[in-house]
Length: 326
Image 1 (tube, rainbow, N blue to C red):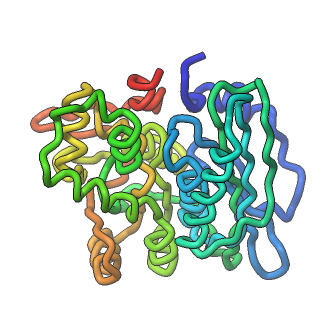
Image 2 (tube, one colour):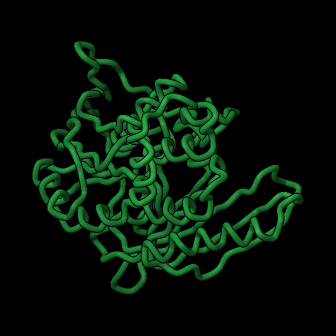
Image 3 (spheres, rainbow, N blue to C red):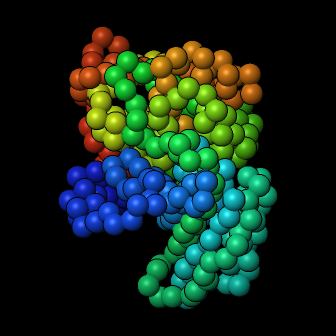
């Protein structure tokens, strides 16, 4: 099998087909593009998500907390607690484990969550440190969102820029591969990206507005998330490549490495479907969050307009990052 998360076809055939619903108190179940589970607890919903960090070395603990909190926030929930699993190879030093935990604690403080448990183990089953964070959040019943729920005619809003996380990883861990590609102004932009990885602010804000679906953009990039949201909602979609925000430093890095920024891991950006996209953009802008309408949900196929061409969007495969680290 290829590196990266399972394809949508593999996920459906191998994993989802084996699962059987059996409880009435489950309010959000697994599916293509569904990143969280939800369980009714009294008058509220407990929303949970889990994600590993396998492709980053620096800031791995920090990334683990933020990325799982993003999933919960994209469901409209307030992240509250984190369980962190750390699997370290035998040559790991104690200070390496300590650094990961301190980085995770920094992220937890930034988001306002608490690390409430987990598991730490040295094992020869891994060649590099592997982290997995499980985040628990809470939301009012009836206000739990997912990638499903979008309708034909809804505007597609994207927050911030494509490939934020991919840009951070490549600039931090693979700087030798992009030597000479960046200009001095890019360094300040790259330093600022650290504060942009969370979608908790926009997820919480959008949950108060008239939205139909939300999906945070992770492996597979913008186009992967678009395909998943359309598939989960039973819709088509069409986006315009020229409307998808991409930072200049991201373009320079991707051009040097021959990567597609629309297929590069993009934690830090959120897709939102809503009847009135301009309202969402204006409301988020008033809260200091940049956003743009990049297209519309349709009742046809999933496509992207590039210049004068309208091309089909293929299901997400291995993220572009694995072309570098694989």
